Length: 99
Image 1: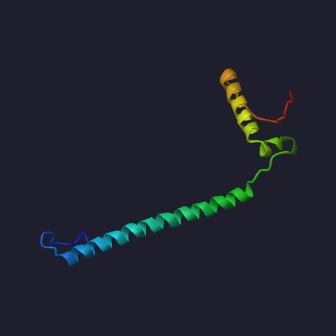
Image 2: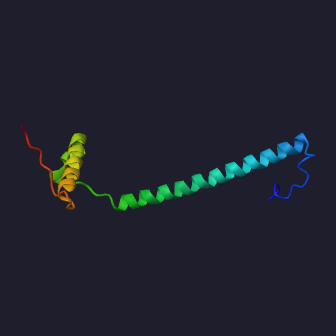
Image 3: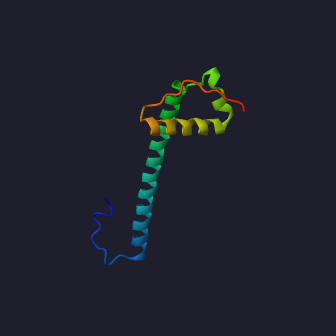
C-alpha cells in the first residue's frame, strides 16, 4: 500500500528509493515464506495420510520390494497387455520363472 500511494516518483532521492526497494524485497520474502509454510502444511498432511494408508506387499509379491527390475518388468508387461487387448489390468500375484 505504501508504494501505491507514493506521489512524487520523479523527485525521489536515493534514501527514498532504498526504502522502496527494501519494502518490495520484504514483501517478496514474506510471500515466499507464506508459500513455504503452506507447502510444509500440505507435506505434513500427506505424511499423515500416507501413514494411515500404507499398504505392504503380500508375502508372495515380496519380489517387488527386493528387485527393481521385477517392478519394471511387471509394469511393461501390464502396459503391453493393455495395449494389445484394451482391457483393464490388475496384478494379482508375481512369480519368478527360472530359466
